[in-house]
Length: 401
Image 1 (cartoon, rainbow, N blue to C red):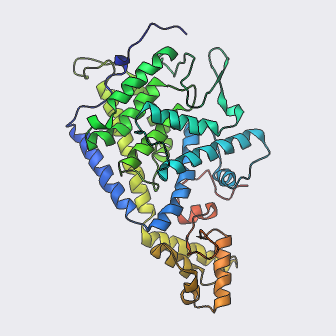
Image 2 (image 1 turned 90 degrees about the vertical axis):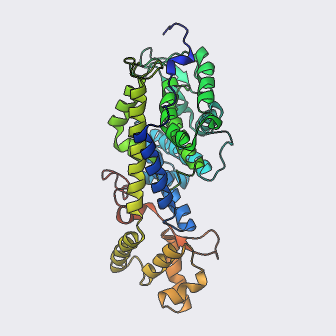
Image 3 (image 1 turned 120 degrees about the vertical axis):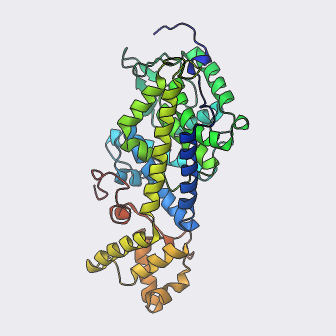
C-alpha cells in the first residue's frame, strides 16, 4: 500500500473550541456524578470492588476486540489456573495481562508521563504486549495474508487500512505522535478541556493507529488513566462496559469522526469538527451512563438487601452458617471488621464465630490481607449475578465451567 507523504495537519482539529455549552454540561455532569460515586463506599470495600471492576473492564474490552473470554475463565487466570486448550489459554493470558496493567494504573504505579502522550501510550502498549503469549503478537494482514509481528511499545512498520480509513505511513508516525503530544499537553488545556480530551484523544489515537495491534485497548486504557489522574475516573466504573454495550454506535461514531470537513461551517481543520463533537458527546454520555449505573447498583441499602437474600438462600441450602449476613453487612458498612468482634456480631461463642469467619473467607465473601488481619467484604465471581445484577450480560452466566 503506497501513499503520498502526509502531514500531521491532516488530523486537525485535535481539540474542540471552548464554550460548547452542551459538551461543557456533559463534562460537569460527569465530574459531579463520579465524585458522588466515589464517596458512596468505604475505602477497603472500594479496593475489593475495584478488583471485580477490573475483571469486568477486561471482559468488555476483550468483547470489543472480538475475543470472548468468560468471566469464570478470567477469574481462573488471576489464580494462575489456565485452560488446556491453547486458544483459551492464550486468551486467559491476554486477560491477565490487561488486568495487571489496569491494576498498575489504578494503584498509581503506572508511567509518570501524562496519559495523553506518545511516551505513555508506548508504555501501555509495551507493558501489555510483553505479557502476551507469542501467538497473540502476530497479526495477519487481511489484504495480503502476510503475518506482521507486534513489537511491544514500538510503532508499526507496515502500512495498514482500518475500514475505509488509511492511517499514516510508518515513517510518518513520529511526526503525527509529536503533534498528538503538543495538542494534548496539559499546560495548554483547562480542566474542562482535559476531561473532554479523554474523548477527542481517544479518537485521534485510533485515527493515527500507531501500533500494529492493540490500538483500541491502548486508547481505552489511556482514557481510563487520564480520567483517573483528573480525579474523575476511579476503580468503580469502566467506560469499556458502556462502549461494548453500544459497540455498533461506538464504531459508527469513530467512523463519523474520521470524515473530512464538510463545508466552511464545519470547523477549520482537515477533518470534520462536527464529527469529532459527535464522538465526544457519545463518549461522555457513555461515561455518565456507566457512573449512574454503578451508583444505582451500589446503593448501600439495595446492595445489602441483595446480599441478605443471597445469604438467606445459602443458609437454607446449608452452604453458609447462620450469622453470616451480620458479618458481611458489618464489613460492608464499616469497611473493615476486627476478627475479635465476630462473636459479638454473630451472637456465637468464640469457636463457632471463628468457624463462621473461616467459611466466609474460604468462599471469598470475606477477605483479609493477613491471617489475623481485619475482615472486609469480598466480591467473588459466584456472587455477581445476585449481588450486582446486570454487571455482565445475561449470556455470560457466572456459574459456567
